[in-house]
Length: 128
Image (cartoon, rainbow, N blue to C red; front, side, top):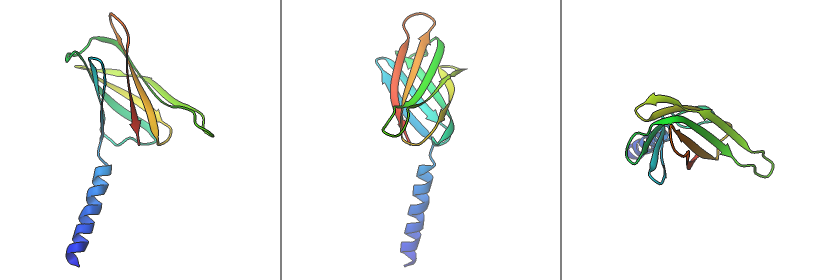
């Protein structure tokens, strides 16, 4: 009986620690790769994401990085969105703060505006 209780307690603690893990996700469009991470699990309200961006396996020179998170309208619920300009942290890393209004699947679009050339959009989704 003691072994079963120890096993159940260990299982419960492990599952709660796994749910508290930080968020990480990779997104890609052609040769552009973005590693999206957060020190804390995604939740309702203000969330801080770190974007680690590479193009052709190199750090791109970008004039601006815009991020848009949105959830399309559904029956009985209006569309929701959060938009922000990412802060350049240097070395291809950017920080962005988004306000996520509720749990569910949110579309995430990252717009990369280079100093020269065409603007790139990288699409992914987040779910919590």
